[in-house]
Amino acid sequence: MPGRPTPPPHARDSFVVLPDTPAGRTAAGRLPRPDQVFRYPSGRPWLVVRTSLRRISAAAHGADAVVVIGPCAVPGLDADLRAARGNADLHARLARRLPGVHHVISRTGGESWVRGTASGLRRVYATTGPGPHFASDRPAVLAHLGGGGLDETALALRLLDFLPHPLGGRPPWQGVTETDPAYALVLTGADDPPVTRRWWHAPEAELPLEKGASALGDALDRAVRAHLADRTRVSCELSGGLDSTSLAFLARRAGPDRLDLLTVASRERHAEDETWARRAVALAGSDDGLRHDVVPAGEAPLFYAGVADPPGPDDVPTDEPLPVAPARARARMLLARAAAAGSECHLTGYGGDELFMGLPAASGDLFPGRPFAAWNRIGAVRHQLGWPLGATVRALLTRPPFRAWLADAVTDAPPPTSRTPQLSWGVRQTLPPWLTPDARDLVRDAFRAAAEHARPLAPRPGRHLDLDTVRIGARHFQAMEEYGLGIGLPVAAPMYADHVIEATLAVRLADRIDPGRYKPLLAEAVRDTVPAPLLARTTKDHMNGDHTQGLVRHADDLRRLWEPGASRLAALGLVDVARLDALAADPYAPLHTRHSIDATVATEMWLRATHPVTAPVHREALIP
Image 1 (cartoon, rainbow, N blue to C red):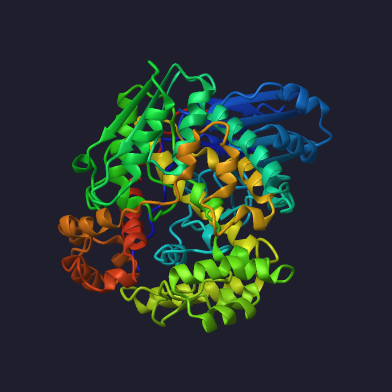
Image 2 (image 1 turned 60 degrees about the horizontal axis):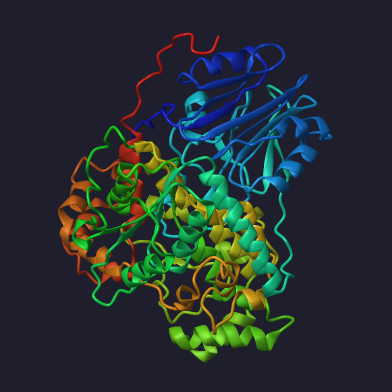
């Protein structure tokens, strides 16, 4: 097998928590020049932060300290630190008052606690094996410090469309582990392995719609204001859907001097998004600080544009391959227009579908106590998607235990269709035919090994999927953040803020999911902010045309990925490039309707962006 590239510390936002030892000081010297260093009483570096877009807030009291890294400055940390009775109490205090888009790092009683967000929007990683042990928000940085190479099994898993818990948290680097978002990572000493402590629990779903909507409206407002903070010129993607429309009006209420709304016109003849976006702007009324930029459909790149291009100076490798990468050119185009308009922060509606659409499996959770309410909701989906009655009843009554489902969640059987009832812990996936026998074995073995000890995120499939879907979406949104980082523009998804997720999950399931209404909880939450006519929309556009046209127009780009000797995945023995080349050459092949190539393309792109960047750090005295 080819040698594994050792990842460098990418020149981007990151932090590293180090032990109070000579090894910690040595490791600090191997990192790029930081923007800020926080130290132990000994004078050795404790926390090394490198950030261009995030704000750092800190407080210290004797040997104790707390640092918060996020979109806005956080006042009052000194009072929190003095009043807290240890790390657990401090993190609980901050969780109650922060909007949930920050990393929190604290040190009390000789222990360091590091946590991200419950949504997984901000994640935490640690080195494994013998000490010394480090923590960071960037697995590639830890792999650099620990000398870890690529994890072939993790890369094989990334070739799937849907990577369920707990497999979705496996980093692509050896010697690095991801901390469950509901837990804080606890570093107790130089050579002692890290442990975890739970800091977050999902709320019980017990609030009625009216009360829950009020709490959600407040949480959304707080999240938007946290991202906008003292910024005077901001932008917002206005697709025309309810999610982005809600955020656009919340951003306007926050009162920036200038708000640029960006809409991409659709190539689809029957698409409605642009019409609804223009309607939203008209209902917003005249405002010198409000601008609407409609990007003509022909100027929007299709999927797969430039997928084989070498990484450019603005390319910031993500922590892992993300299936949204084939739409990179389109995302960059939109962010570049926002930046050119002078935006200091760009808001998106990412997360809205995961939170407010409601998966059929969630309705199945009602069945034990409210069977008629459950069947009412599932029946509506059944009629819409054409699920057979018998198969639907069997799927509802025979949901397997989580471990049994996970062990059997990948298969060689034909992929499910839209007529296959989906009421279990996730989607049972068919392995793509272009995976090599070795890759197939790695994937199957990983699922079976995980199933031996895996525990679901919640006792019932619906709530488990609620949480896992949010985590997956938040992980995928990282790509947008990194595209923005490459051009110096913060990109935000306020709907992934922890308080927004908590407010959503606290609402009674029967109120949150209503077959007769479209996203009823969100609509009620923004009723006092968004004009009523805009809340009446019940349709949603899709981008199937851009996807299909992209396969046709950029077939040559796709084929360049699979040229002999060029593919990193082929060099690792994970894919059959002959089959992928043949598929790229035939964009209308029926196989495209049964299997998506996006995850495979994204993993190849990620390897190409990550592999060449192996230059050593200049060993100057960066951190004395």
